[in-house]
Image (cartoon, rainbow, N blue to C red; front, side, top):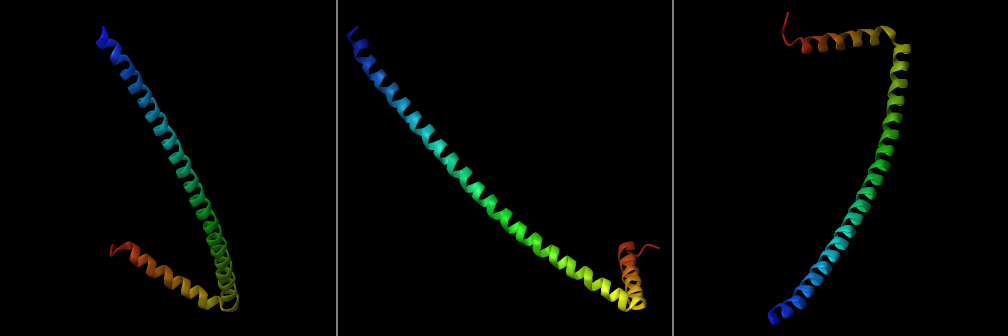
Length: 100
């Protein structure tokens, strides 16, 4: 029995140390998860703000191109019609791939 009584304090100390290590590990893991979530949210916010700016710029450029095309069609209807027909024929040949 004396050997058994000397093992119990050692086992208790090992259990306590194991629980402390597990608790520290869980705290560290939780902290890392919070940091990763914060970094991810900051990255997403940055992407959203950039995407909004690019979207606005693209919309403005599309409006400008639309106004230009409209003015060209109104000023030179025959030229723009022939140009559109020519582009259509070229695209048709490219898409057909030599089939007849």
